[in-house]
Amino acid sequence: MMIKHKDNLHFDNIIIGAGAAGLFLAGELNNKKNLIIESNSKPGKKIIISGGGRCNFTNKNITFNDFQSESKTFYRAALKAYTQNDFIDLVSKNNIPFYEKKLGQLFCNNRSKDILQLLLDRISKNQTSFMYETSVTENLIKKENSSFILKIKNKVYTTDNLIVACGGPPMPKIGGSNLSARLANHFNMETIKFRPALVPLFEKNTQNFSGISLPVKIHIKNKNIEDDLLITHKGFSGPAILKLTLWAEIGDMYKINWDPNNKLASLLRENQTKKLSDVLSKFLPARFTEYFFQRHSFDDTKGPHSKKILNKLIETLQRDVFLYQSNEGFNKAEVAKGGVSTKQINQKTMEAKNVKGLYFIGEAIDVTGLLGGYNFQWAWSSAYQASLNLKN
Image 1 (tube, rainbow, N blue to C red):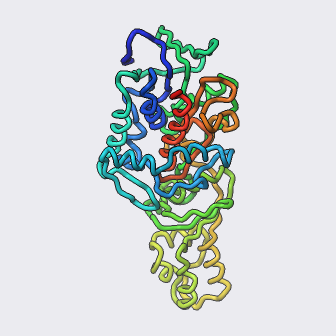
Image 2: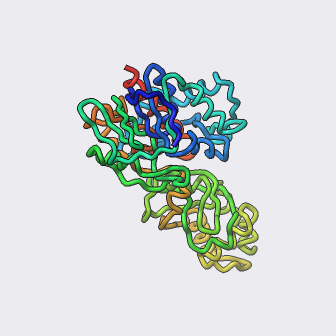
Image 3: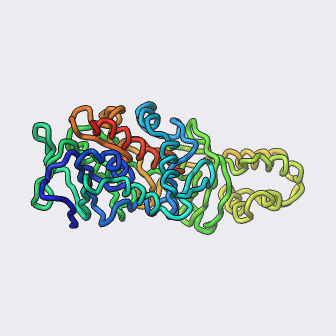
């Protein structure tokens, strides 16, 4: 355990978690005495590995419809108070070069460490201390009168405000856990079960077709997703599938349109005497057509093909029905759905309604965004919203 602080063990704020939300919050609270407790040996591990090492730090096109939660309004106040443009301005003012990849996704030109260093540079070294390689458990935290008391390694720490910013269970190898939910339950707050999101799916009979990638449209409930799908040796992945798992639950049916540009119907009818796979391969990967024909037991023969056969093939290409049976779990999930119920938290302050001085920010709350920088923005926005109350 590495401890960096003075002998006085009382703090204005103790922040659990040195991730995106916790670090951003500390940078907003330079007028207070703060302690950040982190289970890892270094801060921002998830930041470092995000976006393939370039950190997809926000998205230009964020709307309220891009977030999943039990509440359709809870997250609006925070996202209005601190927008993607505010964080883009912060990145620009600190001379961090970035670029737009696609669909509004913004990445560092160089490396994710640029964002982490930005967050650390904003934190006053005189006001904020860090405690690394330190695990916190709910049974060693209690509240007496107006203070929270934490017993850690035979020492007692007290604080006026306890801020839970330790995220959720995804990526357990770098510290992901359900601690935030346990802490909420410890203080008699309702939580919603964490489920993996932005996660690859298991699907049968794909092992011989691993590596195939193609653009698709997916329909799930009232959502339409347009992006790339990747077939893996275990099932489906790629951005289209990861986005699907934000809106879908295990047991849901979803439909894939393998012909998102609507070119195959006319092409098949114009070439009804030719071998079906030869026609499809003009717009689809040849190995995919093999997978598709195997999946549906279509006879890949030369024509002429009847209108009935062509219509059935076109219908299946455009509305291929799948059952969401299982996913690769928290080890592969980028984020989690669920967390502390929004009913338990004041949306204007991020403070627990039933416990004064207890705050939850970032992924700890039942607010989850789309793939593409949305969850980082929720971290920045929710932390900023909390800071407005904590600065007073």
